[in-house]
Figure 1 (cartoon, helix red, strand yellow):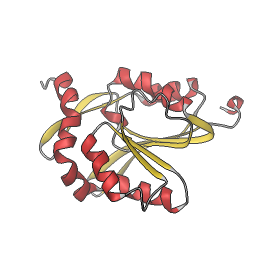
Figure 2: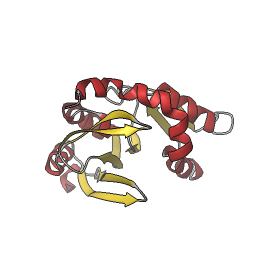
Figure 3: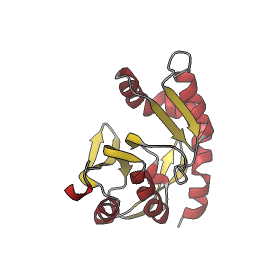
Figure 4: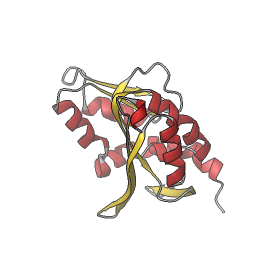
Length: 186
C-alpha cells in the first residue's frame, strides 16, 4: 500500500521536475489562456509549482500579454486574490486531500462574482488514489458527487454539470458550477 501522505507531499516537486516535459506533451493551460486572452479578458494564473509558473511566464511574456499575471501560490490560501468572473482549475484541485477540498471549495466560491462560473477537474469516485507523471507517483483525491453538490449549494452555487470526459487516453471528470446573480435562484 503506498504512503499517500508522502506521495501527496511530493506531488508539487514531481511537477517541478517534469514541468518542461508536461508542457511539451500536454500543454494543458495554453488553450484556456489563449481563449481567455484572445477575448480581451484579464487572466490570473496560479500554481504551487514554481517551474510551471516560469513556463507560463515564458509562454506569455508581460510585454506581449500585459493582461496575464502568473503567481506561485497555494490554492488552499487564496486570500487577497480579489473577485473573478471565472475560476478554473484544470488538473490542480484534485491534488488536494478530501478535507482540503472541503475547506478550499467554499473559499473559491466566495471569490466568484455574481453570475460567475467555476470549473474543476475532480475524480469520478470518492476517495484517494495515486496517478503517474512521467513514471513518478502523484496524489489525487475526490469527494462524492453529492459531497460536491452539498458544498457548492452551501456556498450559493448551482452544480450545472459533473461528468467524465475521455479524449484519446486522457480521462477527466469535469465539474461546472455557476453562481446566480441572486442566491435565491439555487
